[in-house]
Length: 305
Image 1: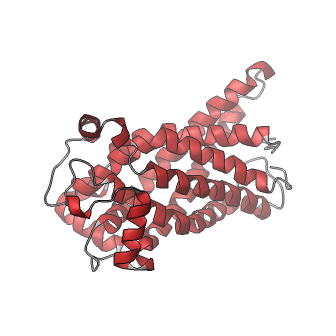
Image 2 (image 1 turned 180 degrees about the horizontal axis):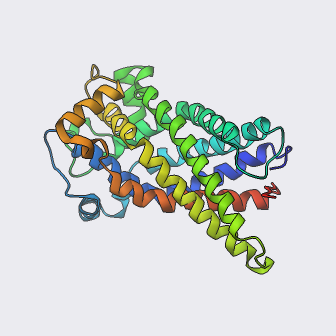
Image 3 (image 1 turned 45 degrees about the vertical axis):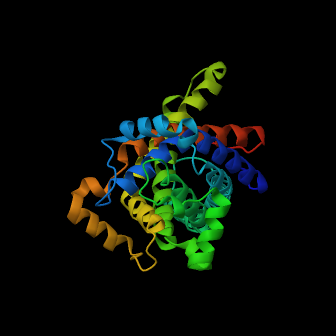
């Protein structure tokens, strides 16, 4: 990438975030509902992701699948802009301004983890609001008196009842998930992209644009699957921390996972895996294709020579 790309990296990241929410939010709603309801000792249990999605459509319509999307759009737009921008700029710095050739883990891993750590501070409040909105649908065990009319009301009520730190509940778990997850995502993306482009050497320039999109879909999609396969247990713990009404409930993700493992085994720790993996491929593929196309339109060059 050109050293002077500056703000353009952040603009391309912003576009990637918007594409990711449009594509992935319905799957995310299903995942959060499964994590909340199927790990609790009481309340409705869904058979699988498909059953959960069908129930949402039946009781709330398509709108139910996009519940909490407002905070997600805001959070994801900022998050994506920052994570792609910080990743690109830090990687360039660690590679002495050179962006090309074989992927360098010593530059990719710290750049991605650093970007993930920074965005966790923005992501935590927006995800807390999103998760609390998502779990209060028709099948919710949340009493009607405790439900929120919208994301802003949810945020204000959380601050009023739990203080300013309440909106950052689950912050440590979000930091762990984002740092580790982004390191896995960008490492997978860079290596798959590199080896895909090695295979396409000599392809005609006419088919080049189509091949670039194809490589973006494969590398982004596989990156998403690798990332979520690695961090889903942390995500399950985060959902429980952020949606449990008890103020004194433990916020230690490892203690929560130990409790879930004792009750439901490994399957409990990977609750929501189906919709997460189904979502991970198209959502991350859409993000990478949008990011790469936006970068190209903005004049950011990435060489693989």
